[in-house]
Image (cartoon, rainbow, N blue to C red):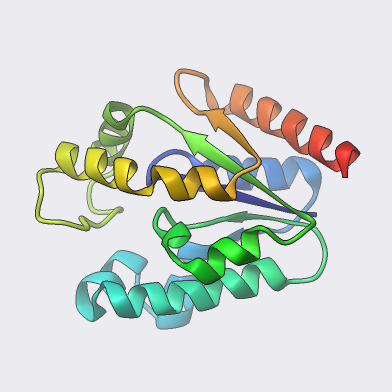
Length: 175
């Protein structure tokens, strides 16, 4: 089984994905980190220097490869990965359990502000407006690809890990 985590930036995909993979004894694949490794620079720098079209092309290649790896794994996708029709199709493959992580835009803004420079701006809008706009624009795709959802605030990381493990267990028993 593959567990794919989708949702906006700063929602907790990398943090929860790594913790859940560790608890399951499965590999954890963070597609933003893998993209950075492949292009030789942080994902945000690559996006800024090469543009969104090239970033999305490389991102799609990285995500599709991660989802195609044999065996179980937890895969954290970048916030905009669901914009790719090919990725949305790959997430629908039997054996992939996709969970939509959610938090209010104000929570995401706070998290982004607590780690300045780690998450690139994607528009010229002020941060709060950008987060609100991107969440609204991508909401339909997040819902389309996910079989379940998990609110990541106000729960702490440990509570979210337990809840996510329970969802994975239920999905594996149902398949």
